[in-house]
Amino acid sequence: MDIRQISEDYSVSGQIAPEEVAAIKAAGFKSVICNRPDNEQPDQPSHEAVRAAVEAAGLTFRYIPVISGQMTADNVADHGKALDELPGPVFAYCRSGARSTNLFAAAQQAKG
Image (cartoon, rainbow, N blue to C red; front, side, top):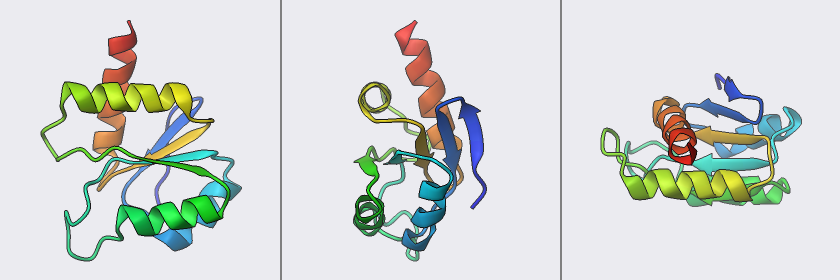
């Protein structure tokens, strides 16, 4: 897992596995956002499997799936709302971390 810090309260990575949630919690994150739709690749863990591990660890989870290359205004609004509501710091993931990074940038720009 390659965690990349984007801001003081927001970091991203590529796909995580449920067994990596303990390390995410140990790193101090309070919330996890999944930006990757289920079944994008046959071997990826479902968001529900990750959600179960995240919630079992006492962290907050949000599922905001974004189709690669097809980010919508609704995706940006949902991500911005999640960032306003979730306890930080927030850890977000997708396949590579790019969608989660782009969503953050678009949500910040939408705020003005």
